[in-house]
Image 1: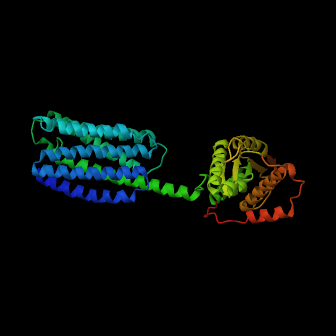
Image 2: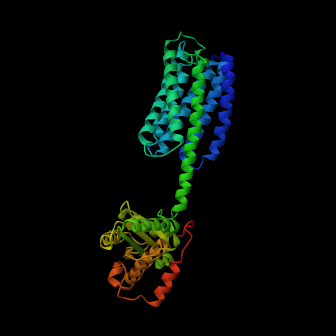
Image 3: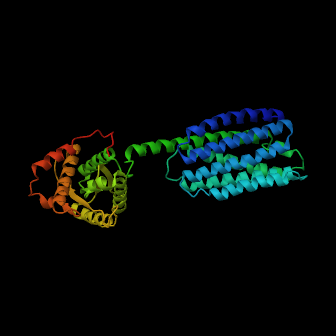
Length: 418
């Protein structure tokens, strides 16, 4: 299929008008994440550039075509930066912004030269091809192991763009000098077929980037529903859910499972004396210490208030005491506000034994054993750990039994606490 220049210009105007409307809407829809904002703004720029190129092709306005080509490069630089942000790589904001300024500067410099349009056309094709190649390399290098529906679409789009842009660059270099050559920016050696292929690649990329952004928004929402907003550890509901899974695994394979219940000592005094902002800061520091002390396989969560819990799969209570010692040392290095003293915690350690019953009952029993040991650690002077099995002969006081019963009342797993 071959379209004449005027027909192709009309197709481009319709196409980029549509993508401009879509991209403008995505600016608001994807504003919650940085990568989504970059992709949306980048496609707004690309759509505006495409409209300028289409008008240039229809009306023979080479200067407008050059401006559009420059905006096209800037738009794809924004999109490429969004890819790097999405994969938590250095965004290179400064170098990419400099590259955009250089491109625009070259456009202005070469605009008045006799052979300027042809040289710039080849240069723009080459620059866009390098951006597409960099995008492909980033997707292949960092996208492995990260399941996504949108990333393969972006990869295919970038591959199509790379092939068409390289062909266009080669054609621009070899074609005869023409002061109006830039009005044919999207037409490669095979005519409109290359132009339409590139337009399809742009649309496929827009769709793929949108899917990737929505996947990240969904992942962030799911993560927010599982994490405690203050400490970043699992919340009560997520911790209960993870605990039931670990208990079920214990029932299947019999590997040891231990639990640490941790409470910040004298935390109420910090809140009452220095205010809740100071208390929140202490909570965050203690949570950070817990997170840095645990192993990758351990599950840490905030159970409520100033109380935390760590579940240690494939770990007996003796091995769990090593974790308790690490936690005690790290927390002792956390300064408390307003005076020359440091934080401390009390820890109860318990191991799931050979009890029978449902996984819910076993989890409540394990937590109650660790909580009873925590109570004894408080009674013995705080800033220490107590192992539940070493105190089995000591019956807990009645008040403790009532407190444990209230704490361990089953809570819906879909609701977080703390």
